[in-house]
Image (cartoon, rainbow, N blue to C red; front, side, top):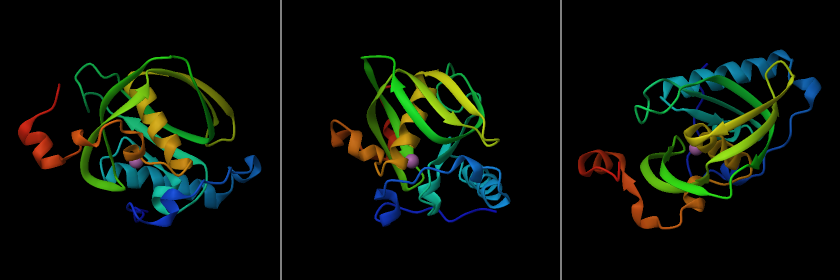
Length: 176
Ligand code: NI
């Protein structure tokens, strides 16, 4: 089922999402929610979607980076579901790159993110998983984990002057 996406200003986007009890992961309701989040992400061509974005204040996000979706050299990331994620940066360094968000439609901005991190979470079967992510993969994870803490990418920008509407972003180009 395609779910309605909460837009900036809806209080759910500013709440800290609740952890999911591990025994609740296998329930039909939770599995249905995960399926609907995946369907919603695909419908709106997102590379990630966090549960608060569909009005569910629980620590769940889905992500998938298809090949060639961004820079030609961006490696694809298979469809993944992460529950109760914890991230640890593995770089001191942060890099800036463009982000958008389905809850903040039609805008793009430059956001600094750690370039490498470790993610620990549960998958949709309730199994613990650990992932080392770099580059755009690490960027999407940080963006989605931020949603679970009530943050959006605008909060992370160093300089709001890079903000652009998508149409102008395409028309006038960007640093890359
Ligand atoms: Ni977002």
